[in-house]
Length: 372
Image (cartoon, rainbow, N blue to C red):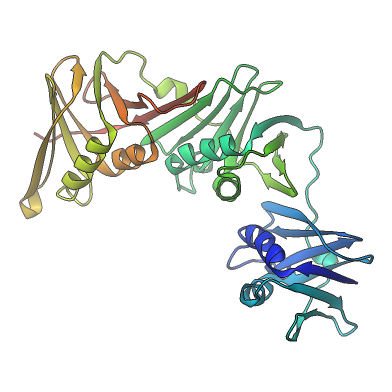
């Protein structure tokens, strides 16, 4: 088995795949990349049992063969090479030798047959999405997903596909984000919960890309195919909570304000808030929004006044500043609106502008009780 490949091209592809490999694996074989050579096509795969990602690379070769190569070692050596062709040759003594312009390097390889087989999806449904749209949907929602191992369904992003639209939802019971595209659709209704790790990988690769991504899915797995890459992952098992039920429909009090101003003000004031509750108080009357925070234990307090547009009754409501800041930070709009009904009901944050045609974002943040 012998092939020649460009060092920087190989490194770029392997760095993408390397994101799948965990720092500590239960099976030693998972510390390797699987190389499968078939003539001029080299398929490289990485897996952590839950997620498997593979890429097809163009190389110069007329051989075939399969081996598993230590991932960390290979990435470390590739990072040090300037752009040049590298020759990989499989030797008899269970090593693979890499020859560069200046030297030779031998790595011990493992048996390819130990590497877990990629799951084949039986009878999948499929839809296709532009890469950048998928990356945006992931980055707009993933921050709101929970980290609670006891509630695994909330630790992922809920994909809801229908012939009318594509909807992506994430929540951790304190905050909720619903991202919807009415300009995209699937051939049939489908729902599944994607874990965070493969989503973060996809987000990193697809941001800004115009590539068509084919999404295939069945009851237990999902597969994303684009360019020369294929990612297969196991879905989170369970039923997603009925998120529509927690989004309050009647919200007579509506505040519209400049996002950057609101964000910066909340950031400054939150420094003075209680370190366990992170509570900030919004007091709205007329065209004035008063943001304040107080940490009684240390006698720290802060207060700021902002002008805003407001329709509704005067009200005071408390929020966890970390959630509010995270949400405002995630939006790109110039102005945002906050709709509220009562101080003990969730507030709904939506961007006023900056969205594409057919793109909708609804963010929901639970209030914290104010102690007067």
